[in-house]
Length: 218
Image (cartoon, rainbow, N blue to C red; front, top):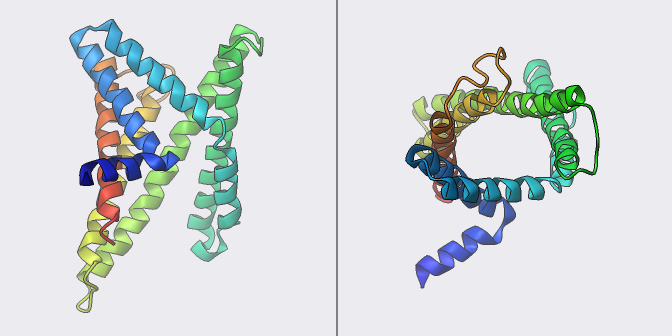
């Protein structure tokens, strides 16, 4: 019964449910691509499409986060500017995804060149958002490392350092994965095989759940 309650609590919130669906999506893609099974790849594609459809309604939360952060004056000129840029990249990514959705459903008709630019922008803003998250996580990791070395450190300092380490690793994997979706010529864009890219995404998805449960210790 405890396991059922834990699963129900995990799936109740949209953000947590997305973590589970994300893991299932990329795990199936990894399995399907390595085992050459089209049924698993089709299941993965359907889960990915479901996540994409739900992201169409993420603007309000992303905008709320951006407005709450403001101009980042409390973080100084560099980190504040980076934080604002991260919010802008996330919002731009969501708008590009809406355009891709309209193109995929046939509601928006554009030229092939325009479609390519929209889809490239979608992947670019995704990559930039993940990279900014990675840079900001390094700052949090450094702060938790300094807190860990203090003589009068708190009891939760080791746990916070572990959490920061996991978060930085996840953002690094997210950045590597996002950039791999870019067209050839953009860093390592399109250089990974499907098993390689889905393997990185699966590892990131696992870390997402680990971070969730580890964070409940605080």
